Image 1 (cartoon, chains in turn cyan, blue):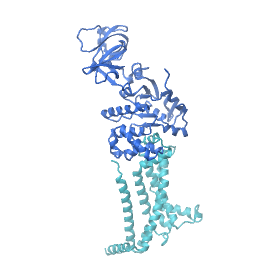
Image 2 (cartoon, helix red, strand yellow; image 1 turned 60 degrees about the vertical axis):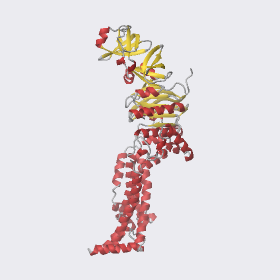
Image 3 (cartoon, one colour; image 1 turned 180 degrees about the vertical axis):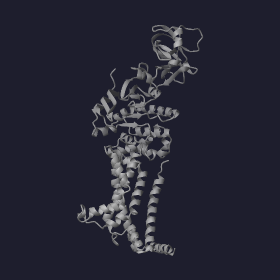
Image 4 (cartoon, chains in turn orange, brown; image 1 turned 135 degrees about the vertical axis):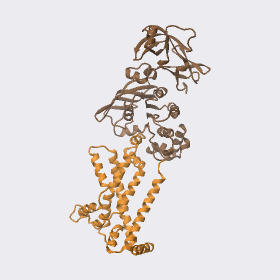
Amino acid sequence: MDLIFDGIKKAFWLLLTFDPEVLSITLLSLRVSGTATLISLIIGISAGAALALSEFPGKKFLVSLINTGMGLPPVVVGLFVTIFLWRSGPLGFLGILYTPAAMILAQAVIATPIVMGITLAAIQALPKNLRLQILALGATRFQMVWILVKEAKLPLLAGVMAGFGGVISEVGASIMVGGNIKGYSRVLTTATVMETSRGNFDVAIALGIILLLMAYFINLILTQIQQRERPR
Amino acid sequence: MSAPPSILEIKDLKVQKGGILVLEIPDLAIAQGEIISLIGPNGAGKTTFLQALACLIKLSKGEIYFKGGKISANHSALEYRRRLAMVFQDPLLFDTTVFENVASGLKIRGIPKKETKGIVRENLDRFGIAHLLHRSARKISGGEAQRVALARAFATQPEILLLDEPFASLDPPTREALLEDLESVLRPTKTTALLATHDRMEALRLSDRIGVMNKGRILQVGPPGEVMNQPLNEFVASFVGIETILTGQASKKERGSFLVSIMGREIEAVGEVEPGETVVLCIRPENVTLSPFFSQGATSARNVFAGRITKIIPMGLFYKVQLNCGFPLVAFVTGHSLENLALQEGQEVVASFKATSIHVVRKRQVSS
């Protein structure tokens, strides 16, 4: 029990003194996962909305692929992003393997299907005639899509939560494409893995607490927004 | 009499869904300011027709002309859509305040917020919902929501209003009140309107013309009296009911009843109407009694008319007897009575019906 108690004590010490290394790891985590989520929102919402509003043969198959993609294993994403970014790979010329940029790319690949799948479901759950009503109000096609997305904003917030939650806690892809380089590509999850393997439980617990708190506060903010505008 | 200019003309309109022809309108012209009701059973194509008119669905074939100009799929369709409005059976309000909802059509058109405020207020007043201004559209009743939907439609000052069973999911008193409000807005603004409904009374009350639809076609279109009394075929007849429908002006009000002169005859009816007001009398055939001659004081019916039988149609358990009493009248008689009275076509009989059995539909004021 001492192990845990000492670990927690040390962890709070690290947190309260704003340990520079812990701080930089935390900020990088936020930056990487925040950027990846943002990219996934832009791609996921537009593609999800487009897919929800179009009819074509093979749509069901595509939707099933996206739904599968919502549970994409991070290590598989890590593997393929690594292959793509390898010096001799198709995107090797970018030279971004083992950089935060590669981590953003991998995390965006993980989060995009999640956001896309939730957007698709949210838009399809709107009343069938709402689309026609918006057009009848004189909207252009672009305005119509924009209004529909606004109408689906509550379930879309769930998409933001799910996307961010998925990537901030993800470790496999980050360690594979980022390399866990100290002071450069080390994030909360990869650092936790490393410190635990070294037996530095105090630091690992501190990082774990930060991860939990971060997940909690971000979801708290989103929940506040969601509950405030809750219909009925 | 020259016909008023058409605001809409439809030519050879066809809509297919999944390879099946669901709408076929060879030709229809709608006059400026005209109110047309489309009645018909579910699946008759009323909704498809309205959506096709609003350019919301693809036409398989045919043309729509708005004020003489052909609407083409690309740029002019948007311009055209911005000059009409559509109200659906569900209010389909946006998840925001009532104000934002009513302003939405204006916002879409890029009208500055300064100008929208006044327009929104004016339209909320029109439908008696000014007090809901800042309420969430999710927290109002069904009747209020449909009023907001109407206010939202009128806020864009549409030249054509398409109404797809807007009152179907409302309770009767709410529907009645809304119908009254709609009528009081449509007429002064001279808005052309098409109303899809399955309520005959709604259609009778509002329309200049009624179109009866079935299986994607308009079977008959004409003034309410014509469609109701002279159905072109059996379907129209069965759908509009076989009631006698007469339009006339009320006069001489006395003790809760009034007289209506119809083609020179005076029919007594009961109800609250103003003298000079145009009313529609609906006489159900089962309420009309036939006898071979005028009986003295034996009947409490105030309306007794001599007439000639023009046609007798067997209807299963009873017979439908069409009469000419100076005005058209339809009576139902049982086979037993038919035999007893020895009724034949061409025969003179006396028809009577109670003033209280007449359904009176008040039309709008003649003036204004």
